[in-house]
Image 1 (cartoon, rainbow, N blue to C red):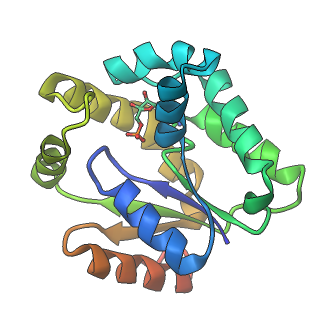
Image 2: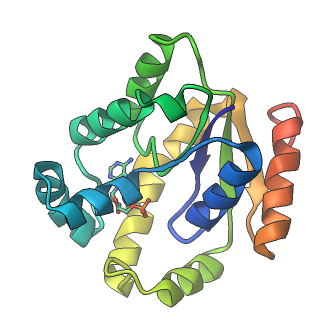
Image 3: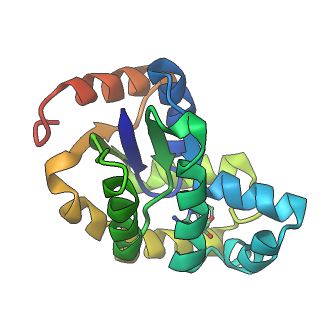
Length: 186
Ligand code: AMP
């Protein structure tokens, strides 16, 4: 199964992606994690990306899509994947379509996680990542609304919306159920 997970910062994408990838037997590919690994290893890509992560801004599309193209070319991604945090812009979505059409394996679904603003801010402030200060969080939320939300219209026929408040297990169950239902009927 080829899946994309979309949701505002703090919706619990990383936690759900870990659980879902285990349940579905597909690799969890998080662009945020990939960037943080590059930064830790001090690669050229990591040095390019670091200032954007620190500021809560999006890394330029060509850098991000190049990294994802390479990752999706690895053997474990040939039977499916769960993309977490990518695509985040329309050009990234178009690049993903191009990458997948070259292998004749389109996306199966886009899972949208939704949660009220007070819940997501509380989750973000409790995890303590360096880009989780109040000001940078607010900026990442604006970036999400302006750059990423339009993707839900772009992907409308594939979107399944999952209410992401509750225990991790409950939300995972809801997401797995949503994947078995026809799109457009969350
Ligand atoms: P995340 O771990 O998904 O919250 O991402 C952390 C940071 O990584 C973001 O604030 C961006 O700076 C960068 N990032 C992650 N995914 C993308 C993407 N698809 N496009 C551009 N920047 C990204």
